[in-house]
Length: 325
Image 1 (spheres, rainbow, N blue to C red):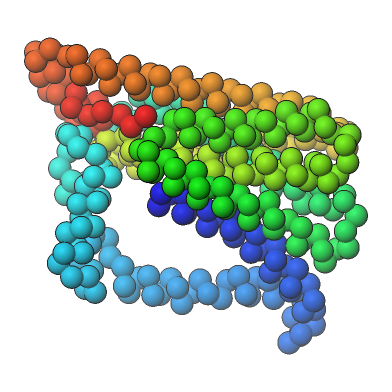
Image 2 (image 1 turned 180 degrees about the vertical axis):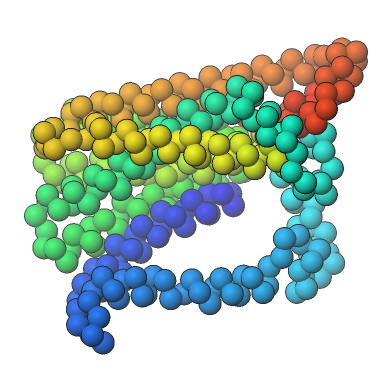
């Protein structure tokens, strides 16, 4: 749920930026500043005092925070231990860099599946940031209203992200929720291909559907990854690797959405739909593999369990670990 709040905040920032840009477009020459200068000033000003407040009030570990009582410190410490997972073969107090765990990231096939899912997520996200402004511009609204029209898709995406995140957290389930979100985004691209001639308002609504699906998916992917990777170093490296690998989607978008394909962008929508379908298939495959691995570990003999537990820095490969589905 905390990851959903973070993802929802990212979606909300897109809506706020659209509204703020609309407002600052009417502030031209006020105080000798242009509208875009007011936008950067209003967006950036709260960050400086907020950063100082966070630096002063927050610390690396709950026990070092002065304004928490002992019960609150213990509660947060236990929460962090539960997040790290049990029996990952590493003390929760151990935060050193372990190079063996770095190597584990690149030989664990599950990490690559998470990365493939991330490519689909980032492809759709870059699609939205590239196409949505162009779509709104083509709808014929005045220049000042264009910025305001980019806000509703992001606002609805924020709500959907929080709702899906709450459902996932309450049911302790990630795979099906992620698959559902990816399916919504895939459905949006299918509708793009079939209803491209139904008017700009229809395309705007479909783009909002894609926005809701993909912004709900990414927090689920990161939380699923973090919950299923044991070891401090391996977890940190895995998150970095998956998010970095997913950025390949940013390379794809300029290659498939070309000026010559306007106004239908059939090639781009077809490619994005295929990538989303592949991400959906990989998500379901990964969930099945994790479920089978849990069953395999449950049925291990004492000798097999002892042998697998003897691996140096076993992390999430420890036989007592059960993957979150």
